[in-house]
Image: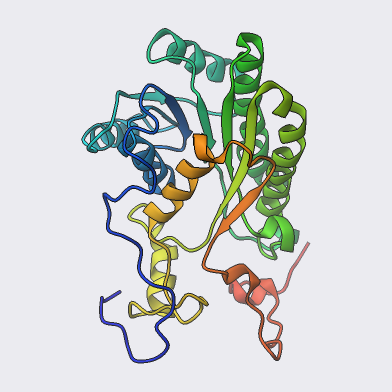
Length: 302
């Protein structure tokens, strides 16, 4: 995409530059923030904004080489504290416990948990195999629960406050044709936000959700990036009410606010950061194109 904006309505203004901070410097000094899926994409962008505010980071993911590269990049963020990388499959409760043990032996028990890791791919519902269904549910919902449970139990046992931010998706409300597995999982993640905020609020644990819209980044898969280039070949994205896409740092600013001392009375809430795109409606509904046709698949054969 080019930087040239064609004539027309201006859309929402661009965000402040990379490196700006929405909260006072040092807001997270002395605090430990654990981000799953923190080695790439939006997870790394969220981790960077916590780092900028002085946090000690623990980034978790399944690929050691990506974690190492992200660890070096995040350690270079001005204001960052210590950055620790932990190879972890969040489907494994035993490995999760080891990550928390290592954090407590090092920088300390995480004060903030960002459940960002997830799995997804498009598919007509009828084509989803039992294995494909389980793969997405096990990472996106069950893995999020395993991480959340470990975090909650440790803080309850220590009688210390904490904050959890679950990364969700707007189709938790609307349904997600072509993504039945992911939509069901994200609906469960949203429900955990609302359930645990009530259960754990008396013990000082906040639980909130954060839903990203379209935030292009370097770690997007090639097919998604190609699709974006074809749909919006210039810097103006007319599919969005904002007439632009989001900058990953904007999602990071929202996450740092939700987990901060300035949002202590916000819990059980899911914040959508997508320029109102999920609320867009047409005056006349467009023609219905079945999911199979959208994905270029032929008629279903059992």
